[in-house]
Length: 118
Image (cartoon, rainbow, N blue to C red; front, side, top):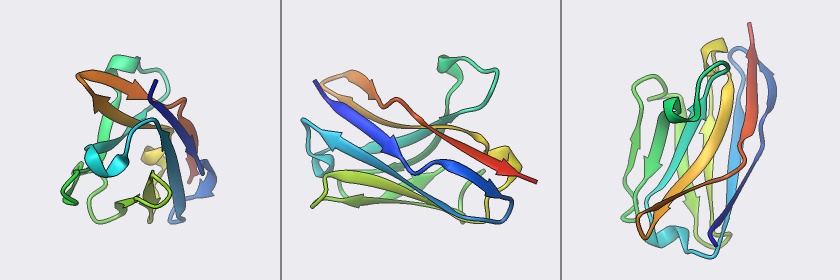
């Protein structure tokens, strides 16, 4: 069973930075497109917002709302994926989830809370 474990969330003031990490087991991150999503309070699982993807080939994509502020990266040695978040805004407050699709099945971590105070 693929396992994803996020860490690095916390409380930060607007304009600050956080680095999230996702430790992955049972698959190699270098062979998969790895994603970050977020879920804001009061929304359902199905409404999770896509944040960023790093493709197996190394290219990355970002939601317009985070482009220029967030950077997704992959550490093949640690078999993990990070999300560097800068210039954080209160609207970035959410639970952030690491995600991968493996053999057609979605796998999610437990999430890590990010709270940005104004």
